[in-house]
Amino acid sequence: MTASGIISALIIGLIIGALGRLVVPGRQNIPIWLTMLIGVGAALLGTVIARAAGVADTAGLDWTEILLQVVLAAVGVALVAGVAGRRGVSRY
Image 1 (cartoon, helix red, strand yellow):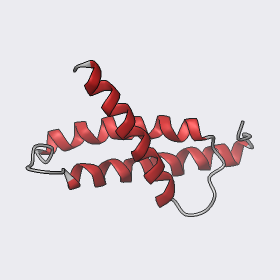
Image 2 (cartoon, rainbow, N blue to C red; image 1 turned 90 degrees about the horizontal axis):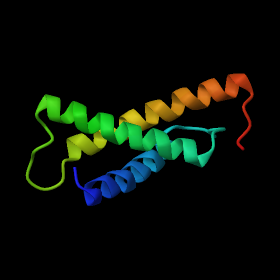
Image 3 (tube, rainbow, N blue to C red; image 1 turned 30 degrees about the vertical axis):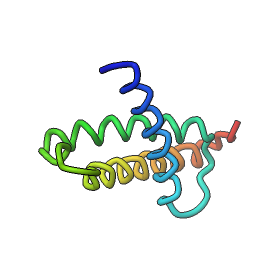
Image 4 (spheres, helix red, strand yellow; image 1 turned 60 degrees about the vertical axis):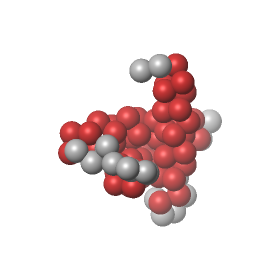
C-alpha cells in the first residue's frame, strides 16, 4: 500500500466513523477522536470482509462495502458508547 493509499484510507475511515455515529440513535458520550478511531477500524475491517466475500471489486462505487463499513462503525460506536456510559467515562 502506498502513502496515498494509507492517507485515503484514513480519510475514508474518518467519514465512515462520522456516518456510523449518525446512524446510532441518541447521544453518544464518547470523544470524537474515539469515533474516528472506530471509523478507521471499521473501514479496514469492512474492506477485509468485503474482499473475502468477493464484493470489493465492482465497477464504480462499492456500495455493499461502504454499507458494511458504516454498519460496523455504528456497531462499534454503540458498543463503546454503552461501555463508556456504564463506566461513567467523561468526554474528555
